[in-house]
Length: 479
Ligand SMILES: [Zn+2]
Image (tube, rainbow, N blue to C red; front, side, top):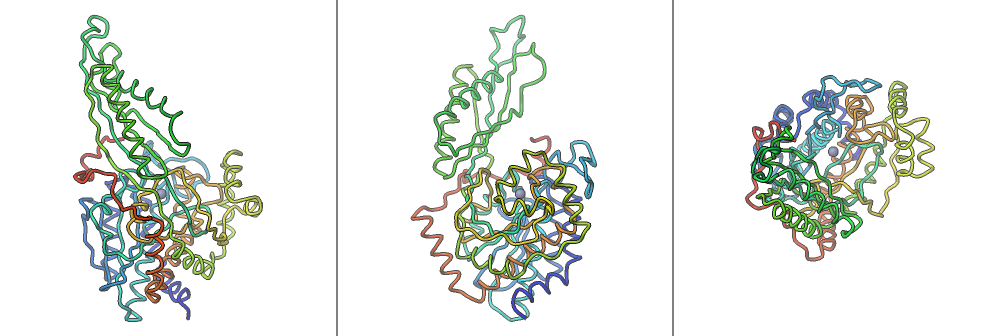
C-alpha cells in the first residue's frame, strides 16, 4: 500500500466523524473571535484522537494548538472555522432561503476548511504512530480569518518559530495546488471627536465629527489617482454620530482596509491615509484617533512543497460524483448571472469552461502552473508563509462559478461533494506532510527557497507589538 492509499484508508475510516464535525460547525456559524462552540468541538475531537491541546494561544480566546509527537520535523496544519454575518441560508436549498434574518452563515466554507485540516492532522498522527516515525504534527486552530486575522497574532507572538513547514487549503470550485500571491493589508479604525450643538439655533458652536469622516474619505478618494494600480482601499462608516440632522455630530467613526502587494507599500499608503485623517481633523477642528485592528502580509508560495502536493493530488484524484450531486451543482450554477458565468469561464480557460458548463463541478485535478496567480484579496496564511515554507491546495467543494461569500456557498456546505472535496484536501495535505517527514531534504530545499524569495527581508508584523486581539465582549455590536 503506498502513502496515498494508506492515508485515504485512515481518513475514510473516520469519514463520519469528519463530516459530522463539519456539519455541526456549519450549524454553529460563529463569526470572528466568537467561535467558542466550534473551537470546543475541534479541541474535543483532537483530544479524543490523542492530541494534547493548548487553548487561548497568542491571547486569542478561540485560538488553540493541538500537538502530537516529539521533536523535528514539526509540521503545522492550519485550520479555520469562522463564519460570516448576514449569510444565513438553508443547507441544500436551491434558492435564496435564509434560516434567520441577518443570521450568520458559512459563506466561505470554513466549516469544511477547519475539518479538512483536522482530518489531515489526525491522519499524519496515525501514520507517525503506526510507523514509529520521529516528528511532530500540530493543528493550529486559527480564529477570525475573515477579519481580525488570528494567524497574524500567532505569527507576531512567535508561534511558528520552531515550525519546519506549514500546510493549509481552501474550499473552492476547482481541485488544484495553489501557486498564488495576495495583497498585504492593514485594517484600521479612525475615530473623530467634535462638539455637538443645535444645528439650527447655534451651528457655529458645533464641530462636526461626521464632516471630518466625509472629508477624510474625500481626501482618500483623491489619493486613488496617485497610487499603484494593484493597491485597493475600501472603507465603511461604522458610526455616523446619530440619526438626528438637527444635532451636530460630536462623534463619528470610519473603518479602512488598505491593500497593496508588498508590506512596505501598505505601510506607505496607510501613512498617507492617516495624513488624510489628520487633515480632516484640522479642517473641522475635531480630534482624531486611529487604531490598527489587524493586518496581513502578502502570501509567499513555495514551489518545492507545492510540486510534492500536486503529485499526491494527482494520485488521489477526485471521487466519482453521484447523479444527485451533479443535479444539485447544476441547480447552483443556474442561479449565477451571465456575468458571473463568464467571469468564472475566463478564470479557468476556454477548454475547461466548456467541460464544466454542462457538468458544473470539477471532478479532475487542474494542471499545476508555476506562474503565480495574484489575488486582490488578503489572507492571514500569508503571515505564516513569511515565517515557514507554506503550501496550500484548493478543492471543488462548490459548483463551478460559485462566488465566495454568497448564499450559494452556504447552501452547498453540507453536500456530499463538499464532504468529498474536504477530505481530498485533508488527504493531499497529509500525504505531503508524510513526504516531508520521510524526506528531510525537502524541508531544506523548501527553507532555502523561502530564504531566496525573501532576499534578506525579515518578517515584521504590521500590527503594533502591544495590540491585544479583541475579546468576545468587545465584538458585541461591532461591524
Ligand atoms: Zn475563506
